[in-house]
Image 1 (tube, rainbow, N blue to C red):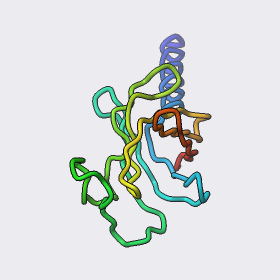
Image 2: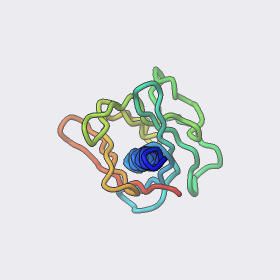
Image 3: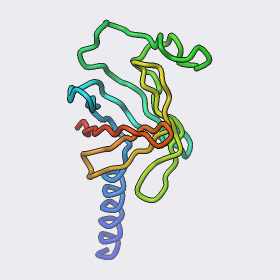
Length: 142
């Protein structure tokens, strides 16, 4: 009985640790240029790849915006920003997720990106164009 308890305890501890070290869940995005809160984004798995969608806009400039700036060939063109998948196809690589893309709905541009956790409550997302990049810090929503 004591061994069974130890096995169950260790299993729960490992599961909790894995979740805490995972980007899966909701994150508050912060604009790296203004420092203002922008949205709540939810990361989730689609098969073996990490994706994220916008759940809520914080203080939007219009009530229910659409991505008018998205490329006309993109499936997100003229679609509602709330509910829009903005991060696609990230693959796990050691301590980070990379190889995917991130869409900036404000300008319609798609960037190569990677994501990693600084700690269980702080996520970094970096978008690239060639050798140039921008990094945003997002915070876990409890």
